[in-house]
Image (cartoon, rainbow, N blue to C red; front, side, top):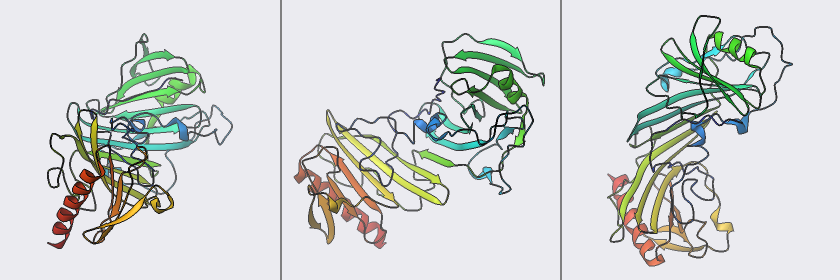
Amino acid sequence: MKSKAIFSGIVGLSLFALVGCNSPASISNNGTTTSTNNTAQSNKVNLSQVTKPTTTPTSNETASAGNLEAFDFKQYLPFTPLLPSYTAGYQLTHSEITRYLNTRQNGDAISYSASYGNAFTIIEGHPNQLHIVPSSATKTNITLSNNIHATMQKHDGGESIEFTQNGLLFDVTTINGGLSLQKLEKVCSSIRVPATQTPSEIHIENHSTSGLSFKPVKAGLFYVPSGFKLNTQGSAINIRGTSKQESYQITYRKGSSYLTVTQSTGKEPNYTKSTTYQSTTIQGVSVLDQHTNSMEPIAVFTLPQTHVHVVVYSNISLSEVNKVVNSFLSTAMHTTSQ
């Protein structure tokens, strides 16, 4: 299967530590920042959520704009997504908005993607914001039935067709040979129906605090051991239905040593169930800490005023972590008391 990736333009950020995970998805046990399933994978078509077609594929045209519930795409996109009227009988099974804002190299990277069963996927966005990873496969020039010039590339799961229409760049790709090239071209030619259905998922990353419902403690406002330098800092928001998860992650590094502090809202794992944690009290706040399992947070606590969860990952000494927590709490409490 071809993996249609898009450059997010965020180098070293990959910061979304999902609330409810046992560890930040962007941190390995040595503190290296890597792509997460909800960050880097949201820059691809999320094939893990694709299901079997809900109808028997036919050649009849079908309305595929979604249900009658209208979603205001202007909240998150600078364009209204367009979907095909012809879908070969496959229905929209997953859609996603991805926004990587204020990236350091490629500016904003904003896209909309839609998956239709196990047949095909569509990625679209403004040409300057849809950073598709180039493929080494040969491009063949084709003309769609609506006289739109396009390019076609073969991959191990079928074909991809790329074209520009109405100021948007589209990439339409078959999944595991689920659709013939002829039908894929017909899908491309019929892309003209404005999307209305609420996206399955919305993912936003930002180098600023914009969009967060809480005021995080930012880098430079709490104690960091000598020699550590700021590696990444930024926010992430993930929306699925009525569930909204927010986080703000800060990572410092010094050689192989790392310190990551993630502030988040939402449900947090019950770390008290783990026998490795012990409870201490710092500035009147209960702090769970451990120093035996590098895959688990070294310290966990909740700010009583705002109910923001704070998780600390690090391989520095516990005494230094206590200094970090103490300083962090002093800043957080001073901020919320103002």
